[in-house]
Image (cartoon, rainbow, N blue to C red; front, side, top):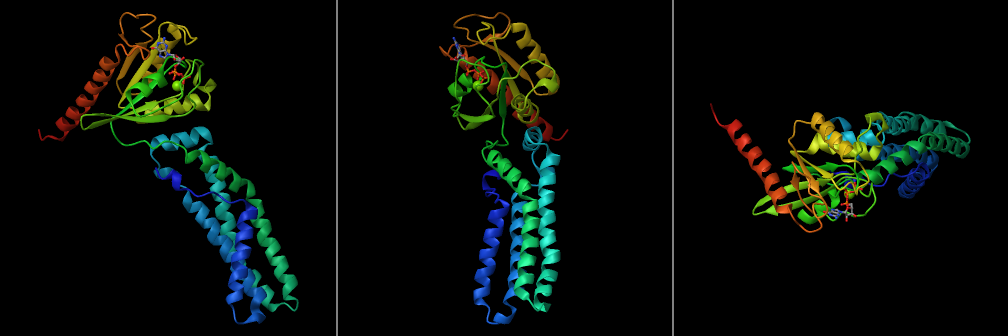
Length: 320
Ligand SMILES: Nc1nc2c(ncn2[C@@H]2O[C@H](COP(=O)(O)OP(=O)(O)OP(=O)(O)O)[C@@H](O)[C@H]2O)c(=O)[nH]1
Ligand SMILES: [Mg+2]
């Protein structure tokens, strides 16, 4: 995703400052000083139009955005609200382009061109100030979007589970990711991506924030981001449970979340009980990110899913 390339979105004052300076510089090049006021208005309105169009174009087309990113934008701000803000910027750009030449013409015709020029510039400034909130909102979005991790289109394991069960500890151990690990819930607040090379094969791991088993409408934006990764990115989901319940949540609730995750996706779900150094949980694969016990078995099982996917894809490609 090219989010990191979105430049800072200027405030209304910054747009105007820059456009006035640009127009003033242009004036210096002009030989015909009689038309200076008219030319100034024309140059300011053109510069405002161009600057605002550049702001609009720096944002991605949300219709063509990969589902994970589109859902993330929708969860965090609502696509409609973002589109409305971009629409506001478009309106101001069009206003400058449509009315700029008329305002410039009035300046030429006037007996008091300086007064008319000031009035024209005030109208243009007022239009740009009307979208100041939109510009600031878009800049906030830009600041978050550019920090979203880059997700590759490759075999992906999404790690999900209740808070504090050891998801980040696992991804730290098996991949290049180095998320924070702490003994309190909701340490991870966004999606974290890591990779692991096995021979020449690369596998992508995604650490997600902890999710609670509760009605969808009670979930906060961070939890919903985690489920967005599960739905949109996973080739396989690694659900980690903590049978010690040291995470602070009963095992029945953790298991209910697994069922919910299974219902959200067609991807296979591998359930692993972590913290086996403290409690061994019968009926499941067990591991301990603390001692390393069982980790290679879990990774091998994930590799098995990867191989199955590759052979399924090859099978589909072969003629009957
Ligand atoms: N004894 C023991 N403690 C573990 C093990 N794995 C993780 N922990 C501890 O469990 C706590 C939570 O670990 P994290 O990896 O941050 O858990 P998380 O699932 O990423 O938590 P959130 O990001 O809040 O959802 C930390 O104090 C870890 O040290 C383990 O195998 N054994
Ligand atoms: Mg975490």
